[in-house]
Length: 157
Image (tube, rainbow, N blue to C red; front, side, top):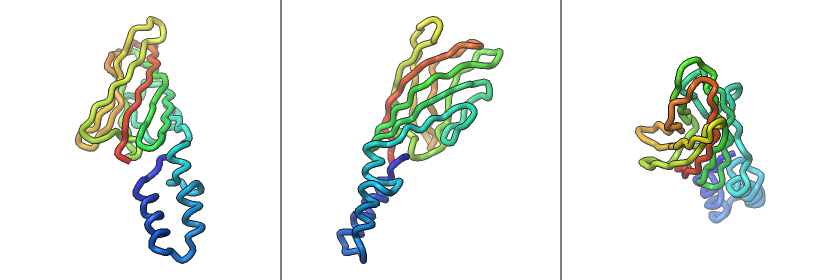
């Protein structure tokens, strides 16, 4: 679960300004709310697959994938596998649709992966330009090829 820094700061300000009953607000800020400090430090892993995806739009229906997103504060780690299930070469990419998981504006982050059968290295990249924030594999995958990769990047939220 992503953490929204602004929501936490608003709750803290409400407590400081003498809210009617600060105890529930304090509990929320520390750990019971989706936007709590606990979630910022110990967030759950979001698993995106070709069968169930909530924050990604793949570049092709011929991609089978399992991607694990772990967000701690503003740092996001994405790791997983992508397989070309089609009959032609594909350059896989995934548009990130959730602002909490998009990378920092005007930044480029690089990761690394390899093709499962050959151990050939593959560059992985994410960037944010004009509001788009794709994760792209810098290789054309042959039919039935699988890439295993890992990338860590920063988000705005």
